[in-house]
Each structure stands twice: as C-alpha cells, then as structure tokens.
View (cartoon, rainbow, N blue to C red):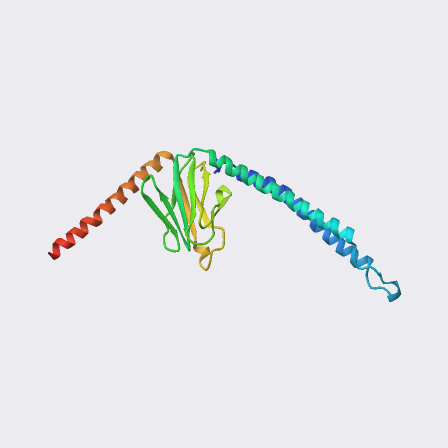
Length: 236
C-alpha cells in the first residue's frame, strides 16, 4: 500500500533528530545518575573528624555548565536547520490547490477560495477536509484567537497557527482514504473536541466533489434573496 507523504518527508527529518536527541539525553541522564550514586557511596556518612572540608568545585561546575550550553546550542542548530529545510522546500513548491485553514476555539474552518466552499469541524461542525491525492496543496494556517496546531497524524506533520500571522505549509497526500486530524496545542476547555477528518480523493473525484459543492453553495446563495423577495411579496 502506498504511503501518505508530505511534500517534504518530515518524518525522516525528525527521525534523524530523534536519533541524535535520544543518545544525548540518555548520556546526560546516565551522567547525572552515576554522579549521584558516586556521591552517595563515596561521601556517605562518616565520623566527624573524617568529613570533607570543601563544598564547591568551581572548575568542575563551570566545565559542566559549558558542556550543557554547547549541547543545547548544537541541538538547537540541528532543529532549526531541519525546520528551515522543510519550510524552504515547501515554500518553493507551486501548489495546484490552496486551502485556508482557520483555527478558533474550538472549531476548524476549511475554506477553498477557488470554489467558494467552506467546511467546518470541531465542537459544532463535523465536515471533512476534502483533498485531492498526488497534488501539491498549499495550506494557509490562520488563528482567530490563540495558538492552535494543525496536525494530520498520517503525515507525521504538525504546524502552529500563530495569532496575527499566516503560516504556510504545502503537503501531498499519496493515497486515497480517511485520516484523522487534531489540534495538537492545548487551547482551552474543549481542546479535545477540536478534531477533524481528512478525506483524500482521486483528482477526478475531487474535481467532481468540488464542482457539486460549488453549485450547491451558489444555489443556496441565490435561493436566500429569492426567498426574501417572496416573503416581502406575500406581505405587500
């Protein structure tokens, strides 16, 4: 079965980071545990006349602090480099479809500007985010209140929605199917209900769906003024 892929296979990027983070974390953890056990065994309770007279070791403490700063700087460099590569390649891609993703407590809105379609999912709506397969899709991520996070688990892809700015991500869905999505940043009382479902269709099926939705939206928009005019005529 074909795999669902982001335009940039971010899972490989972050798997590489994971392979670096974990050994370093285990090394620091081991160093701390060994140091504590050594202190407990070597400097355990002894008669007063044999107690150690010193209480600090500036060189050792300074070396440890410098080592930690270097490790943190190294990890930050790797992390930001990976994120920059993902964002740079994503920004250079020319998408065939743009979807505006609005996050608000506690509802997602998926807007298709080219078709005039709006879909809602969360505490009120339960409509799917419908996308074509094997085509680059530009997602414009916009928050209307607090920080949210757009997460499609199958893609292993997350991206924050930051209030006051528009974040962009370009993704490709490699196969048809239904995939779960979620806000991955705690955003308040009903955060857990801020979920959605992605429905990936073949390009032909997506085109048929989008055309049908656009016609239905246009019919609803034209029916509203007609109904209003009919109501005014009945009362005249």
